[in-house]
Image 1 (cartoon, rainbow, N blue to C red):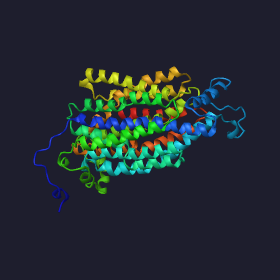
Image 2: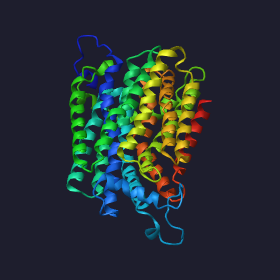
Image 3: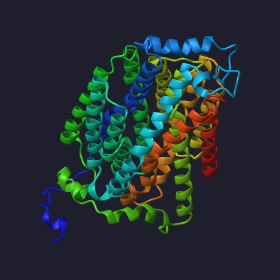
Image 4: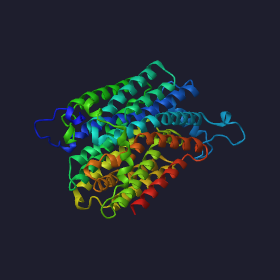
Length: 470
């Protein structure tokens, strides 16, 4: 018997939910992801500070290590090696700050590489089945991964377990689907529940809601992490994941009309490995006019901006922790919230003032230009005010870049909304780990030469994105 016939059909005609119904749970999973990035970097850096400087027993003394390294330099320089004898072994010439930064970057590489394949596997299988199993399961599953992740990380912090437990936590999280899976499902949900006239504005609002999650949580966490007790913060995040998982199961609606009556297990049972071929079919399907070519170019631009964004942000906290900035956790959270506040302000202006031209491709090109300017300023910065100037300029990128997503959805059929973004999902989940590993490896390799090289490297992807849009 066909699987659809085995399930009882609803007696009433299903209705599409409001597109904004996805926002509470999307925002929750993104909050968890954002604070995790700051917390995990801070946690690993602190562990290595204890290892290389046994007398460092607080976050204040961790920052003092960096400040002492800065003060010991003869003159300000982006090359932070303290030796004048290049043939002397690294173990005797590098400052404690260099050793801590390199060790943190090395572990970040191992964490990212070990999680890449599990996250890509889940992204491909579930992402390609999104139109078949629905949007709701892809919102709920990442919460389950976060529950496992923070249970293990809480034990690592409380019991001082070995580094490989951190890797295990990240791998399990990847197998359940990262926040990229939630983002894919969220934008597909918004596309399902809107039409071409109001979709661009809805997608922009959704994208800025994602960005705005960095404001209060990161500020609060940055202040809290001034002390070295990570266990309560990890347990709080675990509780947030548990609450999100429970409430999403109860209140998150399904936007795929023909399966609204199914529960989450019945939806997941509909997944088929054969659906993975749709990843490529959607790009080679014949379309009217130049839509096929335009689709490929827009996807290329979208992937380019993802690589630039993830690559540059992967080392941001580590970069700001190092010399000559020596930021603490609250300092780096202030930089992020500056970007968020400006993004929200200009998005409000944008959605109210230019609705008739809201999907002009000049806008994402302008956004990419702002982002390139931001990370270029980061690369050459030698004072704190330059970092804030770059962050303020780069905030406008988040206002205009969602236009690309909106234009892509207008080139495909309604049943292809999720499928067309699977390559994006791979880059945002499993690919994100690979990009993070590459970024940390570049940073580690160039740390004693010129630590800003990593930003110059990833700015080239922004230039490539502009070329695709042109």
